[in-house]
Length: 402
Image 1: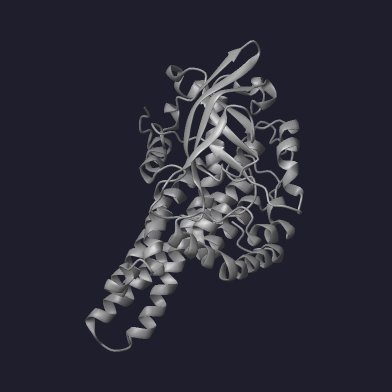
Image 2 (image 1 turned 180 degrees about the horizontal axis):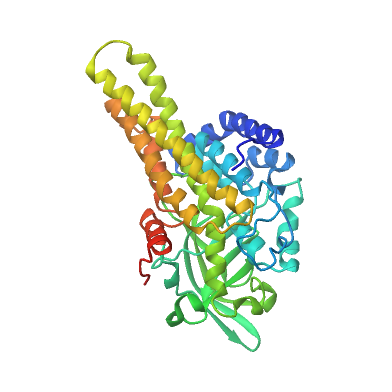
């Protein structure tokens, strides 16, 4: 695995660090105080669009691997770049990091499943640097979270058209998105085999955003309910076209998209953990003379070192999964390793910081108290830790699925 990062990507990470200090953390703290997401007309988003941040996309199908899924292809740095930027942005504020302009989680689905025409139509606008744009991804439902096979949003064919009805929950940035990739089923009794994905454009009749979901943390971005009432679409909105869904390709497409995004979410958790660890190190340096032979101080030092080791290990896990994605190597297990491990390491880092700070750390005006509320979501989004462990058990040990 190549750990030598190109200078272009390193400079991009430095830029994110500067933006984080100047914009991300102040905006995140303000959003946490008010409970309101960062507005789409924020100066930050126009600055990022002008800098070409949202145009870091590739349009067009990846080269084939001659039928051998394990044969590496010529690698780019797409997944690893995302992991590096996601970690650094989340170090400053993960809520703001989610609001950054771009196709969002809908991007990997479009790139992996979409036809050439669909990619050109829906991804090309992000190359425009004059204004920020967003895409969104709608899978989770009120009754189906990590168990995506249980979605009940229906898609029915009538007179050559698709009719969608249902509700999605916790759909990030959907209130400002140009389009949403919506997952539905032709028949809930078919389970995974019935899945279909659609690109639903903003302003489509029957599509509405009835509310923002209240959250205990990560308040800088809007998690929305999405309502679909007799939304009528043609085959051109069916992601990948009708031929893509022979067999169980619909569900497989969703899983491929998650394999691409789970290393990113894992790295975001490490970013939050790093922020807590740096704060802990500062508090320890200011309040504890670790050179003194006091047993309690030695225990604090040992715990701080152990948490740093876990964060470093998690970072390498996310890098490995991203490296495999960049090389076209199936990474389902490795993506689940990262997603299962990194949030727990980050939670431990934040918890340690609160333990050391004591009562002052749980005040609502304290940075670490916010991190504590923010970090728990990382163990839930993109598949809970329990789901990741089931994936690993099935793939590694033949643990039976449902």
